[in-house]
Length: 568
Image (cartoon, rainbow, N blue to C red):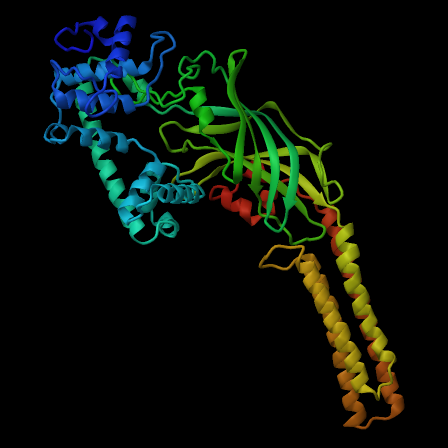
């Protein structure tokens, strides 16, 4: 009776179906339909096209569940309202002139699909026939786009229109796939625009209290306070692949969130009102689903829930996995690293549901140092630091984020004993070649070149401890200086040989020059050792608390200008 517009009542009772109406709707859905499982076989009084299109589109919309109204499925409310609107308003031409109603339904469903569905359709247009192959390639492309903070078709459309990001996206979508993706985005935008226009025209016939809908459509900033952050099971610190493994426990608090009926809702989707318009008042569970870890690799979600503490809501998240970190190795082997876990929200700062991360009063930040398995290699600091910033692929679209960092300091004993000390001894042994008679220039050069090749071999040993970086570390400079000492010794031997054989200097003068070369070489070797020790002492005294002042990588994650409070 509630689905037949001829029997529909008018007034307040018409906008809210009863429990018995919900049972009838369930029975209606259970019948097989010609186009969609949710389309009724009984089309009396509404016609084929209106019921097929409106039912399918309404079923695909996310629905807000009111905590004080119906306990039945919220889809019934939108379904009932959409049918009433269809009974009062004619369908637009793009839905009423097409002969195949099933195609209309599928178009409306595809218009609400995600980025993965869009990529599958684009790959099919590009010529990928196998369904499993399309699915695998679509997952790979979606992951690569997620690295550019592109997670929805709307983000992809904005990225293709933005000149600063288009080049990065084109590097992922190559060849005819880019053409197919643009065609899918254009078709999707056209369908959604027509459907939105139709819903707006139909919804304008409903009387809405003055000011109530306008307040719901206004963006409302949601402030997430970082109340607790724990890092446990910190392991697998790999400076070659520049990754580490960790388990993170995070509590984000929404102040006075329990008194807000929208935030306290159990619905996890994006809410709409009875007219099908977005309310922009999502629940805390929806905000929890938007929490992301941009520098995470193979992240596993262990726990995700919303709890109440007094009048506040707590968003609890526990994940584990590998995280990427750009290691700063200029002071290797006396370096310190800040292992960073970036927590962000997929709600853009300029979007309709902006989010902001702030520090709670007396936050609990800690790291487990007892179960740290790399105690013989790294010294783990028991303190965590939190820096609040924004991330994003472009300056026009930023996402709120907080960098949670655990500091580790390398124990340099292994590198000193196995790399620095052998290089130092090898360069010192080059002094022994001066004790060969100055007349035997060939023997001197033969011994010096053998020492030089040994030093180069040890240079490859130290390179195996480091990734392929474009700058020199402290250990690299020390190795090069030690090698230069051996090169200088070879030049001294060559010069003494020239004086002996070509210029024919006396034997006494040659011995004096040989002793001078020994003293100069020894002083150079002592200077290199003292420089290395001085750098080590200076690095230990100069310990900075925040890596934004030290790392160029972290500066790129910040806004145009670094936050002065973070630097302080």
